[in-house]
Length: 622
View 1 (spheres, rainbow, N blue to C red):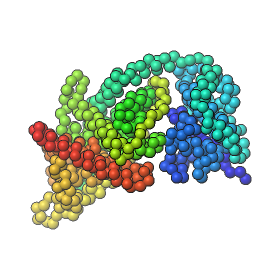
View 2: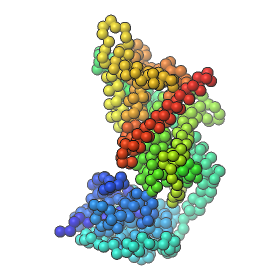
View 3: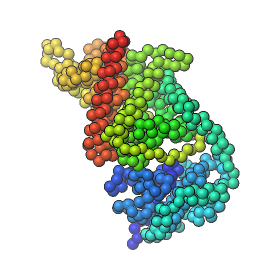
View 4: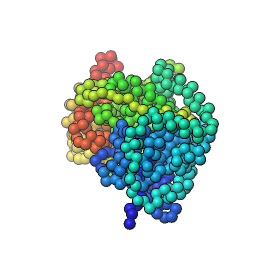
């Protein structure tokens, strides 16, 4: 009995492979790693019209069978039957972007030379039509000598036709020898590109006016002088909006949690359970959730820039700057991903072929200001930076936030320069980048992205942050001082004694005992620093009923001097990320050596930056 047929899904990056894989397999998926490498393996089951099951694997995107990264090497090895523990595919489905046909045809021609049963999924055919392209699918099929099925993966259009064609293609699933492997590997790229253009010319009967608009816009967006200025202006507007647009919804959420605290305080007697709910859960978690509008505004801009096609242009603009510090433009996308979270950013470094280049990118990824830092920045800025304008349409709070993000980027570039000249010394390499056409973003896709980001944030607030806050509340509440003992309950608690031991270490950089206490749980997640401070001050104020109605911002204004607040911001620009970041770094580097190095050098940077900021601000009399 023959084994279940295995079909490989291959194609260039950004062709829509993952969307087609999801449309074909639905929830019947599993994720793991290939044997011996840290490249993710996604596989799923698909039922053919006659009821036969096949295994579908989604291979990493690549431009050719000559790999330039671990991801691309896995794709080559799977289609050639060289991957350990992986049998030869019964057939391959090549996913191509209909709006960029000639570039995607080059790889399809190389794959065709392998001699494997093959079918083309001509994806994003709707976007090609919208751009004014008319593609003769039958002519394309004749030129390639393989079936071509037009698809729109995100809407599952063409999926039934693709499944029917697959049923005929795989036959009984018998293994097929790759007859043309060497010929395909040795294919001349210039010859392939010339042939790809000939086929594209024969298949496309109308050319898109959108291409002319793309070229005109790129003269501005990619200009060596205007381009970087435009990028800086977009970032500046984004951070101004984070504060200006979020003020009203933040006030609504603050009012909601204040009402919840008041309701619980009124309904329950003064006991340990009420303290847990009011001072622990509501005060701690609420202090973080209140910044959800600001996080969503930040990601609204990021999703818009990605959907319009501008984000790839930003990577192109940054390539020259990154080359000066020893990195290639390939590092930009992982670092950009780290603005959301360093964990997927570090995992995205798998697309970098040079091991020293990849290691450097992993080590500096935590310096990108992830979304978890935003609540910390927002609460300190709201508490200590006046809400006033410093120019037409320029708010001081948004300007400070912009400077914090820029400080993280500059810090990462300086760190990369030092690392590339010392522990990760080596030559840097260029990279191939495909420029997508500009397009109007689909509001439904942007809304879905924001909804997913909100769910992720609220899940963290309801799990990691809530759990850490409850543990901290317990450490702050117990043991209770004996009757008649004048020691404040927080000072007598376990957490108070721990903070007393740490305070001398951070006092030289302007931190007080409350900050020392907040730094420890912040290692679980950056946002926990906010919930930890809110819990500490809520418990300390529990004897004063009026004080419990104050927000964390109002409490901080009365407890910290401005130099301490600025030092706290500087600390979080450089401080190590959460434990999840260290764990994924250990996995990607196969040991604890580099996570330990990362932890040490980032702590040194954070301590030095906070100290320099505190003493400079103190000397200036701020």
